[in-house]
Image 1: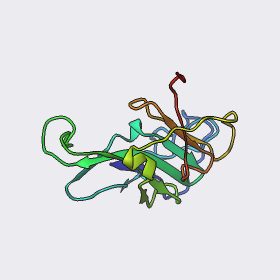
Image 2: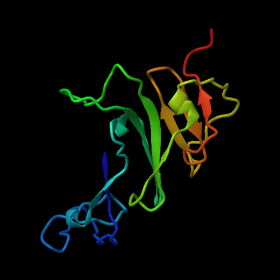
Image 3: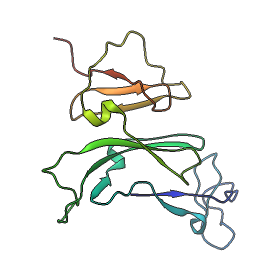
Image 4: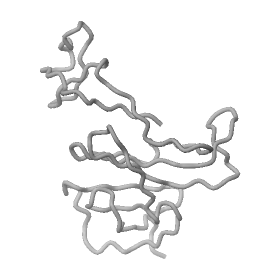
Length: 165
């Protein structure tokens, strides 16, 4: 698993069509400075011998300034066509956290994600989607989701998406 990080200061641009200075087009989002592709750096987030780490798009990515949290699945490596993970062995949900914009990463194994043992709570007040530390993960494969206005740190509030019966 590789993620792009930019250790150099970004090259300012007024919009995504302004050249980056070396003739290559700048890439930016509205209101964000552009970064030239030559300044991007690949870093390894997870690498353990005998293991497979992947599918971050299925597990969520959140960022708050230089702090980034990405969820991913860890399984046992198996050479085969398609995803090189052994489906006969258990897989776990982990997350990685960077506090420096993606240059270095620490691995976290929240118990509720690793064990899959989730006891849903009753939502007693509305979720505050505007909270600056808000994080929300939906897990459609087993029904519940988790939420925490603590930048993805436990304890998590686990909610059931199923109708009460």
